[in-house]
Image 1 (cartoon, helix red, strand yellow):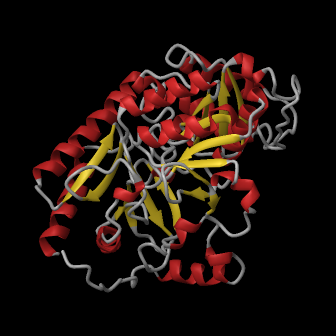
Image 2: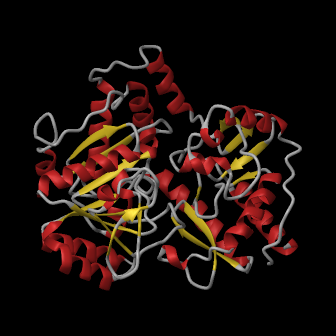
Length: 436
């Protein structure tokens, strides 16, 4: 397919256009998170009004099958009755306390009980209001526990907008990070070592040069913020081996994969126990929640028990805790079997189309890419394909299918979907590539 220019028909979404123009007057870029601005795909952001099951309805009354699912947390779809009931019950009592509440204790207990048999290192958990806060807190705790400064991260893995994590790889095998965002002093990111994914040589070199000062390695064990860059289990195991040998901690960022690919997330899938892990999205049932968890001996250093300070005025908010508690109670083995069945149907159907693009998938997370081999590193992604994806996105939008508004983002399935929704996506993909 040629990277041709294409027309974007927004005639059916005048109210979205009006709201966006209004937002532009008071919100930078008109949005509160950059990807929502549609800069990667062009056109005007679609303003949603309601959701039910696996469908969204925008402010102009158009309906879409939702393959974004609020970027992952809606495993059981929009407005599940069990979650709505829990929310209403809490709303009848209070919105916020700023004090301890029963729901945070219950959710912590349930999360640890679900995780610990599968991920033995998870013995304690603390809630935050976002994944970014969870990562920031886990890094601080790792530095406090080890008494070291440097953090190893990987190009293509996103860990929120923590200053020290907003860095990119430079030249060479192991490069001390340089800021990838204005407003971040070089000194903040100077303690971050950025390595390429799937590169044991670079990893070994970093530990040879800096091993005595590395506090932790942090990685998305299922990198899903810059394509779906599925890693070899051997590479992930190498992280565990080197960190233990050097006295550093291993942090798994499971904000996306935690509870999405099974109770134990990627740690259980690959049989690797991290020292700390970060969670989010799913454990909030769609509400703003993050968490970091890990070994009890590490968490002994966290305030108020220890000298590593961390706090959050709205952490453990009873409304968010109630939603998360309801969602985790809904996540049974049957739910995960259902999601895996949908994912297998999607992948098998996609492969049968014999299209010029391919699909990478793990359980209910999927990603479309162009190339003969699934990328494992950010620099292996076909950047020119993003122009094609922009065309594909609007083609799907016109057919009532909502995908992520960026070719670098992944898609998510939910249990309210059925064979009809999967077939509709596959039929639309076939039509797009036949026309283009």
